Amino acid sequence: MNILVQNAAGKCLMRPDTSINRENGDFYVPDDVDAVGWSPALFARISKAGKAVQPEFAARYYDSFAFGVLLHPSCETRDGKAHYCKACAAIYDNSTLIPYPLFSAETLDDTDKSFYVAKDGKEVYLCKLEGLRDRLEQAIAKCSSHSSVRIGDMVAVELAGVEDLAVRDSASCSLEARFDSNKIIDIKIIF
Image (cartoon, rainbow, N blue to C red; front, side, top):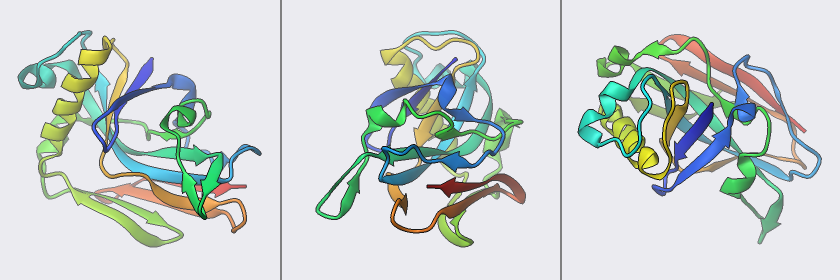
């Protein structure tokens, strides 16, 4: 299984299944990483194999979804700021937080529901479902134009750009996410 990600800049990247953290396990930062960033993401589980899927047919290619978080380790700082390498993020185990079980694709039509992320108990991201089905289906179309999608693959769309989460010199932090009233992610980033 692969994870195809359309990042906030619109580029398609891949992450291996070894990057998935399904059990809400804490993220232990490798020694060579100076900082960790994060971005909120919407994932779709591919239920039908395809290549170059057109946006108007993308709904036929997934059956469930999840909100999650992509962690982006940074091995370099310049001018006091962390620089996140998208390619490097793919090689770190447990850096793709996808909670299981997934939600039925029909749930995306309930625009009253929301996705919420908090760092150390303070809200850092909130969005409603309105318009997200279209963004996800556009991401499936774009990612499948670069790579075939197979049953079981995940396609993700970053909902916002990468933001700083934690740096080695500061204390570890906690990250919590909720979809509607369900707590879906509750982890610590530990240096």
